[in-house]
Image (tube, rainbow, N blue to C red; front, side, top):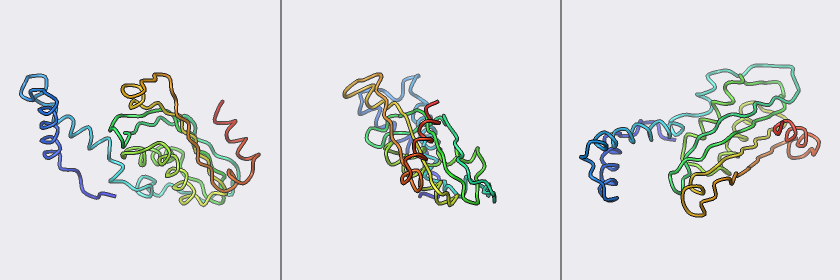
Length: 190
């Protein structure tokens, strides 16, 4: 994890050079501020490198006698494919069975963003979220399902506009108990 902010001036200069290599004139009116805007955008889109799940939780883990399934569905996800630096986006569903601790509901979405705001592949992103929730809550089981569209498949290469990639990561009772997994998957698809 990086602890320092990226050097936006250096990134802007690299973007300027990229524009030149692509055959553009970075001094034309429409592109004059593009290098600085891109540097600012990439700093924001990769802020997850400068965050940890514990920081985004900000202490919002609470003791609870609840021992039921908690699901936060339809969390918007925006990330960058590490292979082409193109966006992928979709929905993430996170569930866990509380085991003495629950986490503030908005923090589940913040944990998703913490990992999504890094260069990613969807498969690893799904796993990282599941393991973080398991570690933070000590949950009996955790499930994460993600449905995303990848611009690297839509804009280039195979150019498939309607392809959706679905990944899941199930831990603990979500992996070991087919009924628990089935309940989670059923609730995610409603």
